[in-house]
Image (cartoon, rainbow, N blue to C red; front, top):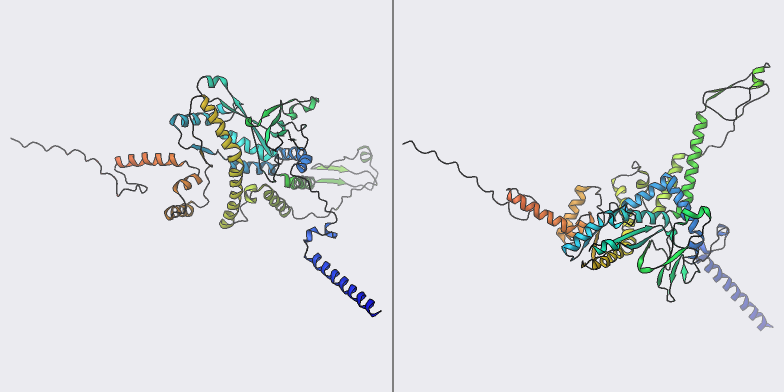
Length: 477
């Protein structure tokens, strides 16, 4: 009997100890992973990188495009991203190219001959590609070759820029074909199913648009990759679509409230019967300067809606969220600089510059610039122009916030060996070879004219050629 009691006591102690350990482990768990009152309406699904996009892509792109077209803040955000991302263009400098190759590259990139539509040069196409990627999540570029130019010994490469809607999304089995992109058994991309026309141009008449298979070597598909295995991008403003919609609704409501407040109307009451009041119907809208004669027994009573929060602070709250969602600063989005000083503005710009640099070096250059350079080399070889394998890409010039301080810091950095002169020149949007060639020519010209420039490393300028002395007058005989 005593043995049974001891066993029961041990079981009770073990149970209490297990309950205690369970309670401790529950306290140590991630709070957001608990089933509690705070998480009871939190519904999630463990969707793959493409399953989540597949169900939402069409609505995301349509709604974001609509907001960019009609909402000033969405339009401004996309412009800020595009202007800082590529600006007036990312310039390519061939490494070890021949003079003929360099001239062919400049002739191709500086003219609209590179555009299949014949509207933009290479730098304009970069801006179009970046804007399309920001608005619709991704962009397609198809290689086109002009046989007539190639027969003349010219580089006949043409770039056809397309929206991602040109992919045949109906060809999607979730495995071998995703969003119109076909893969082999090992998961390598084989090619794209490209529609003949944009579905938005013909869907109004219910025509089924056919598609053709294009090998992967003929298509560039650029987008920001956020998850491993992701096959298509999403619009940059996907996380703040509701904020953009809310700020539109709030702005419209405030405008309507102001309009109603401006409608000063006079109402005439009379205790005596009036044939005029009975014959004249009441208007159903308020108009500025109106005078209404009320019929007998009629009264006008206005509602007293609750006061809304401060519009300015509420608007700023939404705009801060919108700027964060797009990866830009509040000041860049709104142009409001009254709430920042020089240091805080600079810190914000530096963080935004990191995001811009990530788009340049993780999206544009590996996904667009380098493949286009390879396409150009293929077309150049057909024209008997041998080109280099490597291209150095120089981003657009960065505006200095405080030139006096920043240039001094860059000079000290080069002198101390922390960075190279070429690196500094490229960071400011200049091509080092061109800068050095211009400096060499300028200094030679200055020396020839007897001028001393501080950039000249010589001890002084070359002496000027002395003017011939005036001849001495002959002595009188």
